[in-house]
Amino acid sequence: MDDYYGAIHLLEDLVASGRAFADAHHLLGLCYYMIGQRERALEAVDRALKLNPRYLEALMHRGVVLSALGHPEEAQAAFVAARTAGAGDRGGMPAHHADKLANQHAALGDAYVDAGALGRGIEQYQAALRLGPTFQDLRYRLARLLLEAGRALEAREELEKLVAARPQSAEARAALGLACYLAGDVPSARDLWAALAKDRPADARVRAYLAMLERAPE
Image (cartoon, rainbow, N blue to C red):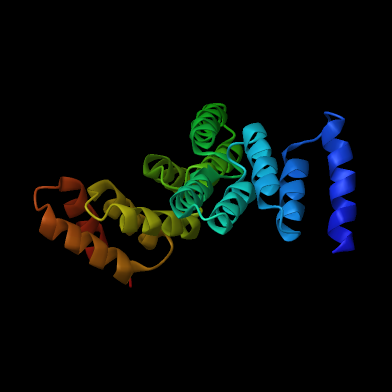
């Protein structure tokens, strides 16, 4: 208990100096809560959230304090806000910033490719997908670049993710078959293209792939 009082004394001095960050207010709130001063705990946590509205731990602890104060509806709202804040973060930043940076990485990747630096272009697309893992158009572009670079196994991995996300995408399924073929897995390529030909019998590209396989060794 003495440790909490000592921490409160130090943190209150820091807060009074005007140099406290959100972490200091949050820790002060936790200490107040641990010694039973729940109203003061809520005030401190709220100050932390004023400085950083997406502070996940502060949102969660706000819910705990509100619940202890007998405000279940407000507590539930705080827990929901914490879940939403956590789900919205990608790469340690808010989702809308991550989306913007993902597209900028992709644009830089295209610039590298245009300049003849295929490997660096691939690196930029990989960075883009770390920030925007649901950007399937970027994943398809990455897979095509990997195929161009002769990295068929890596392309196959990306295309398997893409087909799982977009099973009706003929482009993705055809490209996955090509990645399998170039990686030496002819049976899988045949199965993929045969299934696609059944779904899209008028697709001349798929018919050409299957015709190629008639002359290819297993």
